[in-house]
Image 1 (spheres, rainbow, N blue to C red):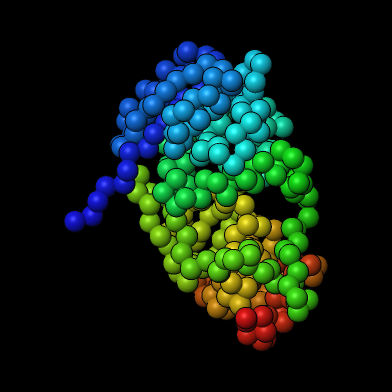
Image 2: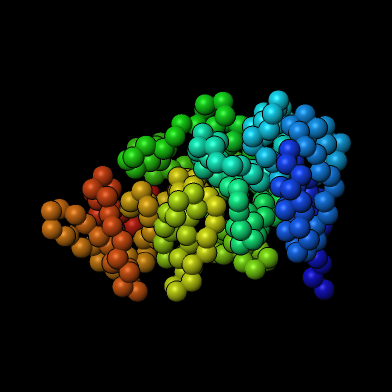
Length: 286
């Protein structure tokens, strides 16, 4: 018999009583959730996190005295999975996008809430909250810079071919967790045709199905086996064996046509590498 996932312990932090009530009402429709506390300030949030040990925190960004970002700085690596709630602070939103964290912009609808909470639940179940939180801390310290208009250059490998190396102590991704209707499924990367950028999300395309995950493209690129996948454009990563044809268009622009007929743009900066990879698919195999 399959055991149920454990109950998520949730803390709500917001200086507006109606905002706290809104989140409480929406959580009432979620399964296996226990609201362990509600507080109205950043300082109270720090104390509550340390005492109550929640799995997920809904954290208002703009609070007098101690902001939501100040709470994250104070907690450091002890910060649980966090969904930020904001009345739109552009600087904060940029930090969340860079760190692949989820946020709710007031006023938010039920569907957006379910999406953000599903993401947080997945992070907790995969024990990924600390990794994502550490990335936010890097952003807040200025370690991670904002993306530029051009393509993001992956870390160079020792052989100089530009293919990314896996994170220290990690292996190439074999499965990716995707959330659907409150359930977490593990999608084999071998099934993915291509990955498309969709704002702060990435869209995993498998035939006619599409799965949305909140993960930066450059993070996915660094964790996918470069002997199987290649970033051909700032907005697209493709599985090489899905490519059928390389098409040269007017003006020197290129596209690839996949075996199912889908066409994807190829950036000029990546065209030569793609041609070399298609001619010799094993050139970057480890």
